Length: 206
Image (cartoon, rainbow, N blue to C red; front, side, top):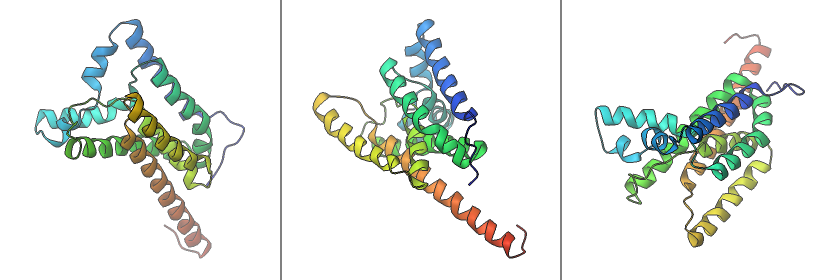
């Protein structure tokens, strides 16, 4: 895939700014709790409702990935995005990077929601954060052969182990779902691109 080394990664920068501005607005206006309550993802609204609640569940699945609980939450996520986002974006190109980022966030939220609603009976607990989407970025890196993406999985296992003793609220399945979404989407894109190149070199058009 085409790389654009030497150029700032615009999509990564914009995503960092958007997440930062939303968090700053909530803190400055003292409406952070209201934003979380209104736009955080509630799994049961998606999986055990219909009509307006179903629509709200789908909307919240998207909006939740741009909301963070506190400074530590957003700092950790944006550090990971800055650290790995540029590499993934330059590898995929801006349009595909954005698609993978958003679908990874949705995929992570869905996997978390399924587990929370059907296995853990925690479907009314609000999910927020860009962790699923950013995990998808790490999945991109893993799919492209960067072992740092796989190191992330080991770190997540460690977090869950620590969290079980420290009573930390970590949406582990959202991380895993995002990572797998990014990994599989990138592998599919690479495969399709290779096939397209093969067709063109053989004199076919697609």
